[in-house]
Length: 208
Image (cartoon, rainbow, N blue to C red; front, side, top):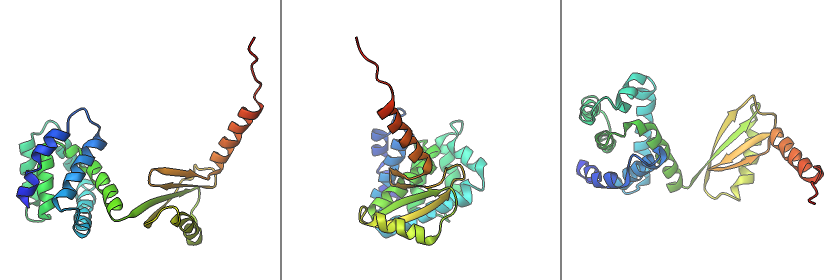
């Protein structure tokens, strides 16, 4: 499996350049990770689970470690050696080899962004549709179920709902499905009303 990952080095060099955005860089690495395991849904799920644990148990707990991994003052060889010393015997071999390659190409600063891009690709592969419901105050399960029912006919697949509370939101709710936002908050309604008033009743300037 290690050979398969290292064989992707030429692809990284060809597709990743300093001029592209972090999202693009992360998407390339996420694609490569999925390619190593042939987009096997179960394997992807297992690896992403361990990837998530690495972020929560290592990077979140030891921010200085994350700073070292992302630092340009530390060589790629030193970072590879650090990963080998700490994770060779405890990490999934595919993920371990992947991190070594990312370190070799000095892109460990993208390690969280790569995970986010990988999650997006997993959702697409598994036909999971991420839904984020934001309200000013907590809502009951019945409201959430009604929203899911309303979205089910428009978005085939498994709706994965996350609820957020934003006290600054003026009532109503905002529903984000993937990259699409359905804003039903009072603030949005007031803004729409204002725009209609300006459009319909603002004095027209006559041209001579």
